[in-house]
Amino acid sequence: MESKAIAVIGAGMIGAAHAFGYRTNLPRFRDRIPGLRLATACDGDGALAGRLAATWGFEKTETDLHAVLDDPGIGMVSICLPNALHAEVTLAAIAAGKHVLCEKPLALNADEALRIHRAATASPVVSATVFNYRRIPAVAAMRDIIIAGEIGDLVNALIQYESEYAADPNLPHSWRYERSRAGPGALLDLGTHAIDTARFLCGEVSDVVGAIATISVRERFLPASASIGHDKVALSAESRPVDNDDVTSALLRFESGCQGMFMASRVAVGMGNTLSLSITGTRGALRYNSRMPSHYEIARFDGSGQSPFALVANNPALPYAGLLPVPHDGVAIGYAEVFGFMIHEFLEAIAENRPMRNGSTLDGLRAAQILDAIQLAADTGAATKVSHAE
Image: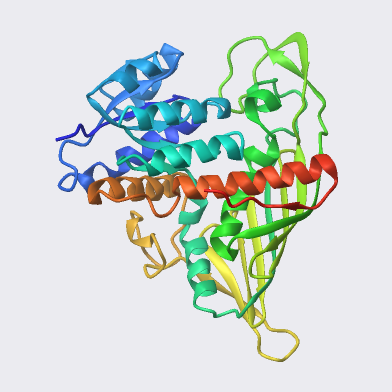
């Protein structure tokens, strides 16, 4: 029997979210995946790996990711590394026969994502990428409503991911602000979630009609010491230019004929970390805002000219709500819980020996293809067709 030991590679902010998700689900899969356990917390910073292991109960730590991939005792890995390493390490994990869950973005560009998807398709392992917003009960319920035709044919969609983390010019420079290591900035880091959610709700994107990208903080100082995630630390006197976008906006055309307005910003003052959606159809409309994650709103056309929105709160009938600790009407839902839902699906696919259906490498590839088209449209000022190569 293959190993059921789990390794998390990358012990920073997102590595901790994965560890939480696995820890939450271990009891749920006790019988379906016997022997499932948190085995190794891996990070080049041994102290960071040690803190992750101590907090979440990993059996050991490791500083060499290749040692983890070469370890026959590890059966599944989460890849929680900087963007530039996602493709290389995911391909290595697949080649090593590990089930692999890679953080978003799956790769820096569509060419890399295509390599991963083809390798995953040719392998018996379960391969997936992190699109946790699909698993917010309200968002999943909105998809069910759209598929059922309750709001008619889709007309337009407004999809925005607005974050404030980079609005502070005193935040230190890091790999996130270098196109060679991070790819596009807000477009890839945040826009990946928004674009995947747009696909999830509205279907495939055929064209990027136009796009514009802006860098608003053009230079940042290097940290005087190591920093994690978006932490503020003391700055050195040495600065580096920022060469990827702080804000990108685009006009999209979906294959259904629906039009979409997309925006991703990492300098949105006052917005914290917010995904907002507004989708209009011929017979109704849907709205959602991640700052109020425990409900969505729906309006049904009534001919009055003032069709009202009704609030639909979380309830046990919504998708994923049964996994909540307290699946009761109106109970709030948190960001970390949604990671638990995502990892539940990953473990379920492993238990059932089938491919990941929701957040597959194909989903990661499709998002990358749309993001590449947006970047090209922003760079050239020209409308761009979206590739659908597989």
